[in-house]
Length: 250
Image (cartoon, rainbow, N blue to C red; front, top):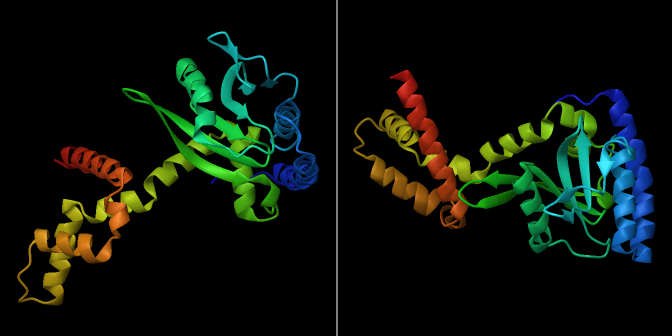
């Protein structure tokens, strides 16, 4: 994570505390969607540092339909925001329209929020339009004096946008997760390494990669990981990376 400037940290702490009070009152009053949009727009300005008059718009049309909010920097839309009323539980179904917007316009980042919860998604253009959650922020219950909370807030801040920290964060969570690590452990180079270490430990031991892989799958790595579609995706990614590395070294 990039270093957060002191001035930005001070703003994040002060304004997060202020909006926690505002959101608490709004939640108690069960404000409607239009009023929630106003609060979210103010948060984008006061907490996250975007200019209210030039960088935040509710008049962004895609296919003759307006999204709730968009954040523009240097005339380029960086985030699309789908805003629901503060009392609404956020569901992926709420996201589909904004994802369609983003895919059509080549915008990668979409935020789904009711003011209290902020969910950030990355749009992935493959044969079909797909998306994946990058992070979730519970605004009402974070402690902005904690470094982890500041890092999450900074992902959406204008200053963080300039440093592309959300893309760096996304790449990190794509790599440092149980699916990718499990796929690496079960890959041929690591199985070879484990076999060598076992032979070093017990010189007379006769063991092959199939036996090692079976032990890992049945006794070491949890079954729910191996059965997940994300694990299959991770395996393909690891194999591509290892093949590419092998060609370079060869």
